[in-house]
Amino acid sequence: MDFKNILTYCGKLGANNDRTWFHNNHGEYDVARKEFLAFLDMFRFQLSEEASDIGKSIMYMEPREWMYRVARDMRFHKNGPPYNPAFRAYIAADRKSWLPIGYFLRICPGSSCFGTGLWCDTTAKMNNIRKYISLHYDEFSDALKEGNMQIGGEKLKTIPRGFSADDPAAEYIKHKSWDMIFFIPDEDIGSFEDFSELLMQYVKRMEPMRKFLLKAANYVDNKRPEFEW
Image (cartoon, rainbow, N blue to C red; front, side, top):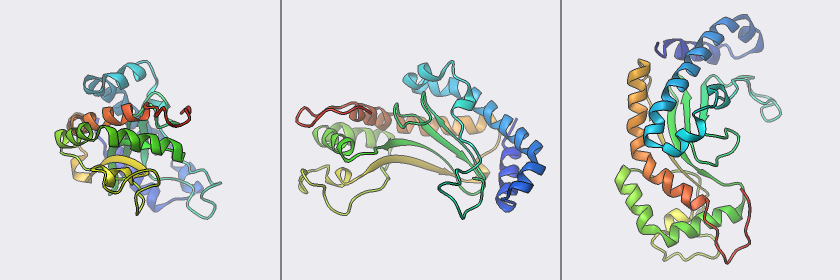
């Protein structure tokens, strides 16, 4: 098995992004989908060796539970193409929520990527994450150094209210999300075995920060009202 069918199909769908072509070529989609699900099914075992908390939570799940639909929700893309020409999955116990924190995989010609991170939907949640980073900045910095990582994500231009611009963690406190993403060129997507080995190299680098962010997500500042994720 390899990713040729997946990449080829995504390229065709990107060039022929309409319902007629999709339905006339549904057999090719089924083949590519089976290849993608087969990879996810195999990759879970390797992932669990480095991320045991994820491994325990997904071991008895069906890989299709992690996979996103290729059809776009046209309520939010009224004038756009009907399909997302990519195979995507969020490998976690709950694909519809960013908690517990898992790993995201996207396979698409020219825009494949793999990563993890923490995204919040309210300011209260963001501020709890920011407070935790401020209180444990040494641990945060160590996790970055251990993985030789950089944090990306949307951020504010100025320090949010309630935090100090002199805080050593100020640049990370400005963030509204905290993510780590590796973009993967097509030539690095070969056999399933080689590709899973590449992803595991990324996992080993991201795990220290993913675990830190997971603790930050579970932190409750006693000076603030408690909330539920």
